[in-house]
Length: 259
Image (cartoon, rainbow, N blue to C red; front, side):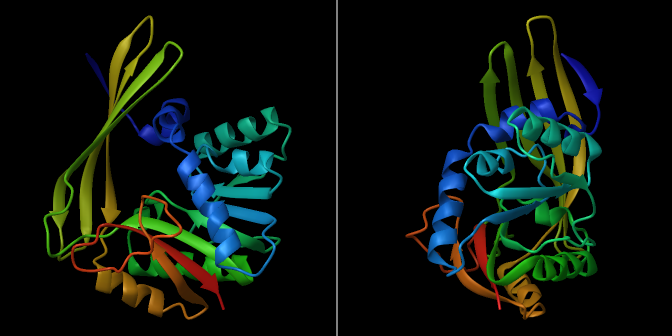
């Protein structure tokens, strides 16, 4: 198979096929959170690191006023083209999720698939949370999902997904190439095996994720008193099932309420 070294986020069509197919559980969970954890009527939504807009356009079709931000221009173009196809405002824009300002505050925001860990320093993470505190209206929500680094059990080292749409199939694989707890990063390899009627090839990429143990995440959130933790769930996306974070916990979804 031909190997192509490239940035996976520059291929939104393939990225969306892999990560956009399993959207329904997240969508329903987020709507349940809007109903359960805030007394506000949620109309305006914002997604930092919106990517292809896999959830954003569906919320738009459901009647919400949506907007999104992403650092990758190709992702933003893909997202806006999708919004346009569905007769929705092209409300995604290129920006840094650790340094931005919204023109209008949102009632709720979400970032559910680990994008937060792309922020490589404490300063960037705090900058993001403070930007979000300024973006979310009082009483509103920010639903933040990420993988913690467990300290009581070995962390997950490899994941894979496969998806098909028509004549296009993509097999995605992610593996941890290096884990440095002292410097708090994971060096992660990522690949897409792409199958079309005319060719087969593999796109290979590498990225770094900042790591968080449960106490480190708790300490970070404590530095942004504008948010309180309303609930903690996991990637099963069951609003009736909250989790207690322990040294063995890996998947978490923090429901943060703006004070």
